[in-house]
Length: 251
Ligand SMILES: NC(=O)C1=CN([C@@H]2O[C@H](COP(=O)(O)OP(=O)(O)OC[C@H]3O[C@@H](n4cnc5c(N)ncnc54)[C@H](O)[C@@H]3O)[C@@H](O)[C@H]2O)C=CC1
Ligand SMILES: O=C(O)C1=N[C@H](C(=O)O)C[C@H](O)C1
Image (cartoon, rainbow, N blue to C red):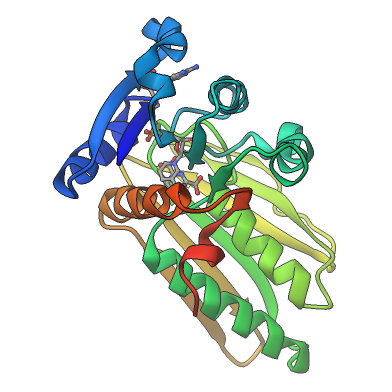
């Protein structure tokens, strides 16, 4: 398969190695300093472009790839609040193809299934309140993480006593804390911690007067995210429209 990379940072470089190892060809690599390559025949020849950039660049990159008729797999986070409806419309009505996931690792797909089940059964146990925490490296631009937001939306969709998620505290690398711990009973608080080079830790904690139940996904490296993105590109080559992790990992 011919793959174009958009964004040649930590994820782009790891995806390149895994894609080559699985027998794929990298036909184009686009980063900030060679945007003209979106107009190259090499980019247009790609079966799929894999996009990992940042919250402000992602949407524009989708438009540029779509304009060339190239399908996109993207893991960029932090852009949905501004462009989600527009991107969904382009893929459901406009004939474009985007596979987007806040987290491509199979471990988080399994974690998500447990999260959904736990949220459903917690409707029978009102003595438990729920809160979340995510920890990432100090370079991360968005908070809460895309994965935390997806997990929170899964809880809000199933647990009747939570109506929305809210951003709680953010602990910076130097230990300073901003934001607030205050939230209403119907709100699910997500706290964020930025520390060192942590690839990504997500925790959901249900707490009652008697005990607590905690589930955690702790990524040991970016390897799982990168492999998942390449598997998603292989899946996307044979599918169209708005795609996500539940289409690929069915359990
Ligand atoms: N969904 C998932 O499984 C994962 C998602 N992510 C997300 O992916 C994104 C990238 O993560 P990293 O690779 O760790 O970041 P990074 O900062 O190491 O790399 C981003 C790269 O994008 C480039 N870039 C910036 N603007 C661009 C533009 N307009 N066109 C092309 N390239 C551009 C930067 O120069 C840089 O090389 C972040 O939003 C992060 O949250 C990260 C890991 C896993
Ligand atoms: O920025 C990162 O590094 C990560 N971003 C994604 C997110 O926002 O959830 C996925 C993973 O946690 C790593």
